[in-house]
Image (tube, rainbow, N blue to C red; front, top):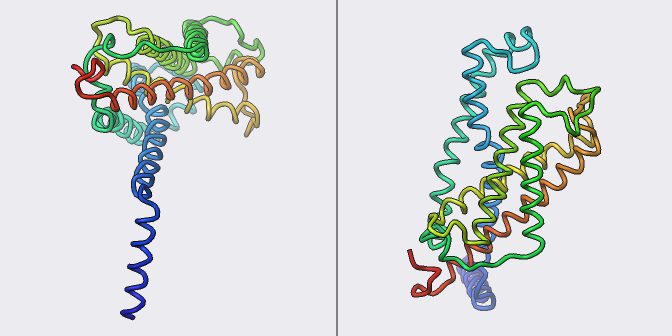
Length: 270
């Protein structure tokens, strides 16, 4: 038994010497998983906070957000507890995630936008343009526009759908603006944590929601249909997933670059 314990200890010591950065790599992988799942979870839940509040107000005013009076009345008592639960998780993520990011990359949240490096690429610029276009399209549907909607399924564009489109459009536009602010360093005196936090949330929203909707559009479980044309739905959700990933890459690159900057450099100044 004693020799076995000594052998195991010797083996662990040899592994530690042979792999000097193994613990650091394990920590980085754990941190990456935490960031990814927090990003997706926040992308799902945080953008739903305004929708939840508005739906609650409409419920108090006895407005039908969609689905008919019978369905709404039958599900009201059950969904109230689900709404409270999802709202609590969303609020928790909205509070805890920025704190974690601030602790993880402190310098990325200090100073002003003008302090960071002005770097861009054609891919990032194209992603900003696509996000702005998607945001305007979804916002137009929220306001009652019919461009791209299938006349055979426009009944699915009820008030609930319009509220969801308004939320998606708002976050897409916020994402486009925040990434533009990061790469262009404008407006100069804006606190850096504002676009960094908004870009993180917006990219997660675009990736998570479209990552869930795209398989629904393609597989059509339970006869699922969308208000827009099928091909348009596939294209917009595919673009949204790609834009979300690009925006997240911009945020992570900026955060890591700022965190690695020397303490006396302009990027580290508050």
